[in-house]
Amino acid sequence: MSWTNLITRLNQTADELATTGFIEEPDMVDAVGEVDNVIRKLRTYRNGLVAEMPPKAKGASYRAVESRKATRTYNTQGLLAKMMERLDTDAAGAVRYLMEHDAVRLTWRWTELKDVSHRVGLTMVVAPREIEDGDPEALVGETWSTSTRVLGVTE
Image (cartoon, rainbow, N blue to C red; front, side, top):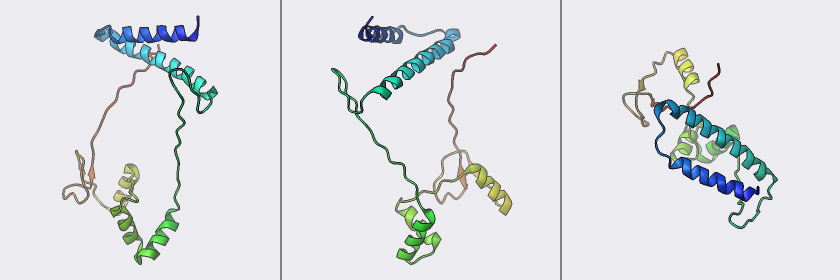
């Protein structure tokens, strides 16, 4: 059987599955697990094809489009020194200026922040919500999200 026939059948099966209606509660988690298995197999097959495909390949219905992504690293000490010199300010002033212009964002690290705060005797006030800079009630805002993964059952 040709690959086009197999893909056509796969597409039809996916359409049928998507329109079969509601799956009963006891079978739902197994259905999700099996769908995940099929997706994983298809992703592996697809990735193999993409690896062999020329970057700008064209077919009858589709074409490959190459994307690019730059990863940058920054010399923080060098950048701060230059900014301090140009702005005629200290490190805090340079950082504040860069933050005001959204050129840099501080990334807080919760575990390390708790440790340092404990060491210097600072009580961390955590609000069960998002907060903004200058919040009078809390130093940290905390919201939670959950996700569900379906894992195979081992006996």
